[in-house]
Amino acid sequence: MGIDEPRPEPVLSWLSGPVLRGEVSRATAAAAVAVEELDSAPGRGQWDRARTLLLDVEAAGACIEAGLPRRGGVLVLSDGSEGADPWQLAVRLGAEHVLALPADAAQLVRLLGSAPRATGAGTGGVVAVVGGKGGVGASVFAAAVAACAQPAALLVDLDPMGAGLDLMFGLERASGLRWPDLRLQGGRVHAAALRRALPSKGGVSVLSSGRDLAPPAEPAVRAVLEAGRDGGLVVVCDVSRSRSPVAELALELADLVVLLATADVSACAAAARAAAWILPHNPNRCLVVRGPSPGGLRATDISAAVGLPLLTSMRPEPGLARRLEHSGLVLGRRSPLAAAAGAVLRVHNLRPDGAA
Image (cartoon, rainbow, N blue to C red):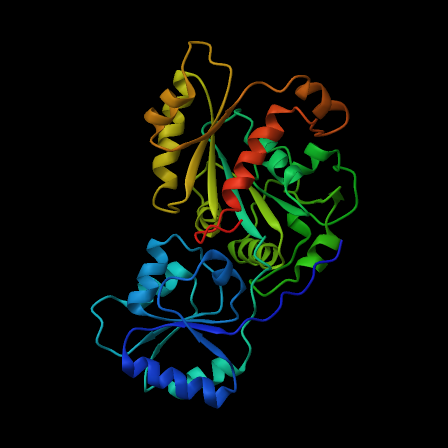
């Protein structure tokens, strides 16, 4: 399945001071690019599709508070009068440049003229799935979310101690690249080319761990996640509970982090610790509870104890172990897994401006 190239959008600017407005006006004219001025935080659709975003320090802070995800093509502009550290805000937004105007006006013109990358078509994004403890079924749930994503998904294995996500779809003998085969040093990778190189089933392309337990490098993980997101794919990551740099990078790049817990006391305690780990890395997080509960705990009880909003709960999936053993993950129309995965995708697809 091909992926359409996104339509370039005008440069978006959200600036409050007349000095910065004047400098940006001159720079965009010199670079011969269109600019659209905003007077409030961009909606998620605007944020995803914009070619470049020009933000002053106050606007950058407001975008962070609005929960907008990290992306490329963000320039933070300063006139030197701000008390906040512009670089701290820039890092949190994924911005590559902080420019002090008017001193850096020539650099601003060059950056505007170099056509920074456009982001995806607005349907792409990153969902990170984390198990509250080992054995709760996080890998299966991540595979279910990817299987339910439309029109295409990239399932990324970030648990080197797991069995390998290619097993979930019966692709363990299929040709295609795994993490050890992927040689990336942080450069760009094209989403369509990546999908063609990976084993796939239906609309799901799977980047699985190898059998040597070696974790992928951080630059490669960033390149893959950003390529999928910017190519309009739903990227679903099965994130290890180990507190590694790669796991924490995935949490920070995710639009939504889903913590999966079972409905028992020990799982609840472990999930609370996992939630405390997730909290500093991403504000957009929720809980999915898998039943049944041997002691009668309700999903709302688990949510209150863990300290995360409850997205949904699900009953056991009939015949799941047998299907995984013989044919890989297949979800029926009445599948509890599919229903819970659909709830995750509906939340992920919400936009701050109300558009799906």
